[in-house]
Length: 343
Image 1 (tube, one colour):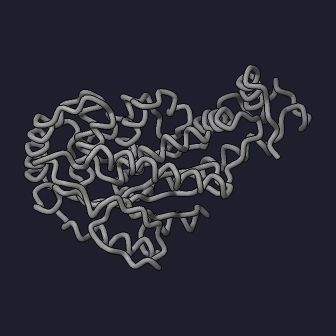
Image 2 (cartoon, helix red, strand yellow):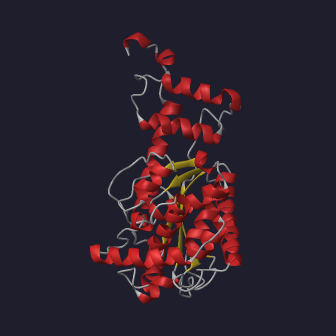
Image 3 (tube, helix red, strand yellow):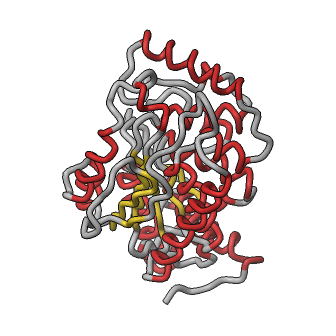
């Protein structure tokens, strides 16, 4: 059982506890900040990382059908969902080696999966509309996606998980993320667009031109309208999941470019959501570093990743475990009988 501290004194208690460990003050660097943050989220000086779970939301995008912004065909989304279910993806390898639970959600893949497939079946539709011509989804679908995602997170929390990370799969979803980034950060679309799954310079330029035209066509007035206009079902579900996880006071591990785009939307709805977020890594996808700067976020890792799937989150979770381990298990100067003057 964790020891609860009064909110008014918790921050001081945590700071003192960290500083009194048998080490020079600040010598554990970012792990000290991480331990402090997890303690504040859980409102205890003895925090725990319980059943950490990655949830991967998958969906298809209407714009992917014409292949103008994506080097891989839309069918790859469904193929990767099967790969997740069969244990063959990077997120499976990283989740397994780090003892992290993994859930895969069909949020709106353009494929009919067998009911017995080991995924969560929460399909909103068979992919979104092409936002070159019309909004990606109806506002009612946006609400439905957020509600379903919240229910998924609530169930995971009720089963004992207090630390959750999110991933995604959806061919062309870097295009949606770039549009949402431009909307929520007021950044020129050309500074938001990157290579995605491997576009060359010519492809990036073409993608930028297409998305600039899309951005200038639509004028959403609210965060939900922006999600419905530019988002994929997986991104909308990410937003709903993030909001529910914060409501439930879970530790939220933020992955890369796509998840951070969903977080931008979530933050516009709940200004306090960042209090629950730990940023896993700095993606190599163009735009992610700007997103992190906008959010004043300091990522734990910088490994040149740009895969998605929640891979960065899965790799960062051992650092969360290490942070609470030193806070809970490391001796203090007093308990170890060590003079602080000699430390």
